[in-house]
Amino acid sequence: MSSCSIQSDGMAEPDQKVQINLNDAPASPVTLSEVVELFVLGGNKTQLQRETMSQKIIGSRVSWSFKVYEVAKDGEQYRVMSEMLGSSQPNAFGKLTVIAFLNARNSNDEQILLKLDTGKQVKVRGVVDSINLRSVVVLSPAELVD
Image (cartoon, rainbow, N blue to C red; front, side, top):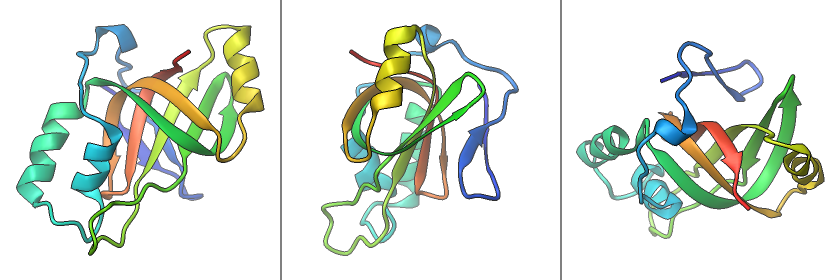
């Protein structure tokens, strides 16, 4: 599995050590909402609960929908970042974001990625690479879901 580093511009970037095949990763039914509720700062979940969830989902394949905040391209790889996701817990003050590193599978994917606007809903399938600082979930590799 690869790891991820935070760049000087605050963006996450996967380290290209060992790339897991998306289809080889075990599927996880964990929802994005569950992850947000567990990891958001100020929430009522414990460190033990967060560690247990991390062990459960890192290296697993998930399918999540979120609203787009930003799309960038570096070489052949696209970086799709979600809007900040908040918790329903009354004392939570932090937010979480998803960063998915995608390679377009075909020209249709390229067109979809080029036309994604901020606030538009997108669905991706990807391997949970890391959870950083309780605020960034990195999916790498990932792909668009039709």
